[in-house]
Amino acid sequence: MRIYFLIVLLSLLRSYSIYAHPLADLWEVEDIEVPKLLERERNLIAIDKILGSILEQDKFSSSFGGSTIYPKEDIITVHTVDFSKVDDLLALPQINPYKDFLSFIEAENSMSLSQLEYNFDQIAFLASSIKPKMTMIYTEPEVNNNGLYFFNSAINNSEFIKATEPYNPTIIYAGSQSDSQNITQIRRGRNLNVKLLGGDGLYNNGSLCSAGFWATDIFDPNDFYIITAGHCYNERLTKNEFFYSPWKSDSSSGLLLGPMVYHMTFPYDFGIIDVVGKDVIPTFSVRNDVAAEYKELIITDSAPVSSAGAHICKSGRTTYFTCGYVMGLNGRSYDVGGTKKDLIITDMPIIPGDSGGTVLSFVSPQNLHSVVVHG
Image 1 (cartoon, rainbow, N blue to C red):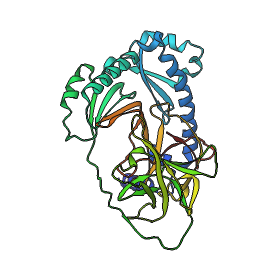
Image 2: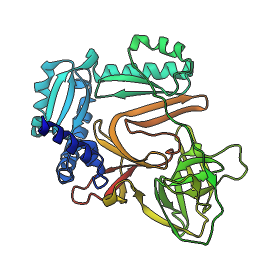
Image 3: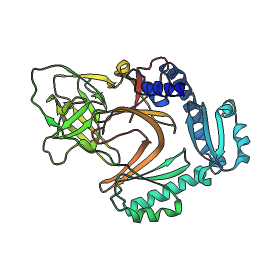
Image 4: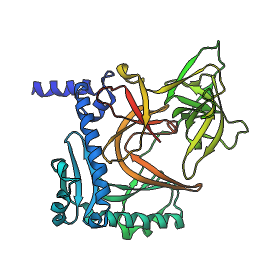
C-alpha cells in the first residue's frame, strides 16, 4: 500500500513539473519519450493522409467512416461499416505497406464517410436557414458522428436542435467559463525594447486579445505586422490602437504596438495590426513561460492540420500555453453576425483573452524547441 501511495505522489509531482515539455504533459510521459512519440505521430499523420484520400473515393466512402491517429498506441483506428471491404483496402499498393498500423473497428452509429458528409451538409443547410446563435457544427472522426456545440446554454436554440434530430448529431453544451478581463492601462516609464512573442497579450481600451504571429510587407520587409483575431477590433472605437500586455499582469504595459489596419470576422476571423511602436522587437517565436526549459519556441514554418487525434497547442494571454488533441477539421460556427468556416476543433482550454493567439504543433523529434504554426 505504501508503494501505491508513493507512485501516486510521484505521478502528481511529475504532472506539475515546470520543466516538462508540453507534449510530455499532454501524453503523460517523461521528456525522454517525447521524440519517439513525435516521430510516431509524424508517421501516422503521413499514413492518415494517404488513407483519407482513398477512403473518400466512391469505392470505399460508403464502407468506412472516419479515422483517428493514436501516437501512444502507434495505430490509426478506422471506423468500418462493411468489413468485407477491408481486404480490398489492404490490398491496395498505397495501403499495404502500412497495414500493421491500421485497426478496423465497428463504426459508431453505423455511419460511413458518405453518410457523415451528407448529414453534415443537411445540418449546415438547416443552420443557414434557421440561423442558430453561438453554435458550432463539426464532424468528429473519433466518435464517427457530427456534433453540435452550443457556447451558451441559456440561449434558446431548440428549433435548430429539433430540426437536426433526423441526423442524430451529438449535442454538447459549453461549461461555464470566467469572462473576467479587468485590465487597466498604466503609464509607461522609460523606453525599453520589448520582444513581443506569439501568445503575448494585446490590450485595446479595456479588452484583451493575443498576438498570433509576426508578418512582413512583401514590398517592404522593414514594415512589420502582427496577425491576430479580427473580432478583437472594437467597432465602438474611432482609434483601434493596441498596446502590449504582458502575461500574468493585471495591467497593460502602456507600450504602443499600433492600429489594426484591416480586419474581417466572417467567413474567416483575422486582423492585421500595423506595428508603428519603435520599442517593439519582432520575434518569430512563441511564448511558453509555464515551462522553464521551453520558454521560447521557434517558428520554423506554417502547415495545415490534417489528422484527428494529432496534438495541437496554443499560446494565449489568458490561459497561457496549453495543448490538446484535434477533434474535427471542418467546423463552422453560427452567430448573428454570420458564419465562420474551416475551423479546427480541439479540446484545448481557451477563454476570452486567448483570441488571436498562436496555434501550433511540434514537428521535429530532433529539435523540441521548434514549431509550425496553423492558421
